[in-house]
Image 1 (tube, each protein chain N blue to C red):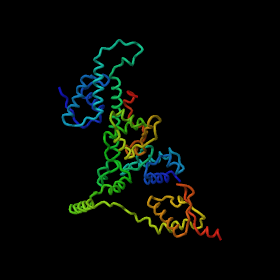
Image 2: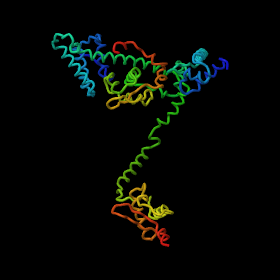
Image 3: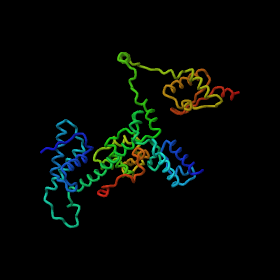
Image 4: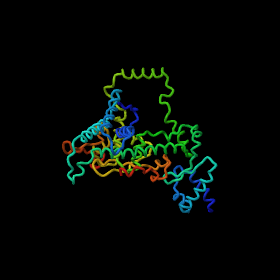
Length: 246
Length: 171
């Protein structure tokens, strides 16, 4: 005899098992494992027939039920007094889980009732809040018409057909600007290090700063001294040296 | 200030406050003691007998709300957003958190027998639960607990109002 099951209402394998137990009108503490296992598997098959996905949790429970069923079929060894745990009812662990789940399921029914009841009371601010929330649910498409959408798509296609640039030069760093900046950094300083001039610079800025420094050397405004390969470069304003010589 | 005057102030405070106000909180503002405030609130409640309002006690705080029989009318003002329906998965998860807090996701999933990420996320979004810290041990999992909002959304005064029937069978 098959058991018709309403679909989509089970929160998980525990929920399904509790329903089967209630439907069979059996005691939770004395579950007829063979019957329940059979009905449980039938439910999974019915899901399969309707091409519904069976989540892993349901399969794990099926395995658990089959394991318990087979353990119940095996002849029990005579209990060796001390070792109580070894010979306990193989259903007990599952039953404890079910009892615990059943409790919380009942509490959740209680909470759902309270929630519905509390929702019938309104605080002063609550309405306002719900009205304030309306902009969040505005239609994201807005006034967009089909022809406007077609136009956007057309523009997008033109963008895509355009050749991507090979080089992009950012206008952010110019040589005259860097020249001015390096001069400014050297005002009143007897010397500076090249790395100090580069502080917080991007790759492009480093290049331009280096060009600016070379330009200042060419103009005779500064001298550069590097004492060893790859070492720090000292930048000295030329006027200082002139003054020293005098 | 006479007690009659204080009663009016208490009513004003509860009405104007955005969150439920506790008796001791009101008491400290008015230099009264908490039992005095409680009896004033009872008087206010009684004065609402024939009116539209009701003083509700949620999570240990007072809140002035409309009477439930007005709900069909008030709902004409707009769809309630705050009390959007909770899924069964969310309510189950919330029940477990309310009783077992601080509790980790894995502990919740052990009770429910199914993954509970989306239920937890939805409860977090609704601010019905929050993170209480992290559990010592491998992975230091997040510990969840219920918030103040839980009480007002469920019209509960304290956790003691939650049912205990059947709890001894597994505890």
